Image 1: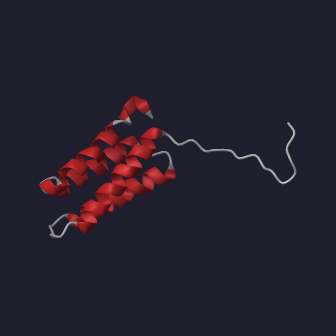
Image 2: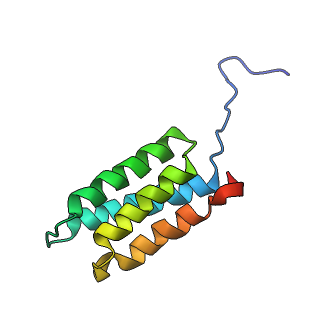
Image 3: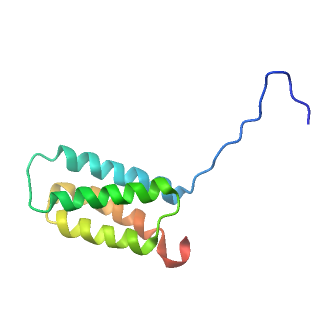
Length: 103
């Protein structure tokens, strides 16, 4: 293959759409939780588990059982906060896309 002087080949990294969806869902819930004005008892747990999910996604190969455990803890800690419910459901759907046989 001939290349012009000064030109380099650009290789594009294609990311798994499931990881992309989960990354956006987790980031959105983290933002909404950070801006939620009221304190509640298990907020710290939710923040820690969202950080864990974000780290798994950043690693590129999240463990399904660990993701589901994090999701369960997040739901248990903020599930009663109705203002966060739609975004929490987005995270759940994103985790569910991974399924046992999917990744």
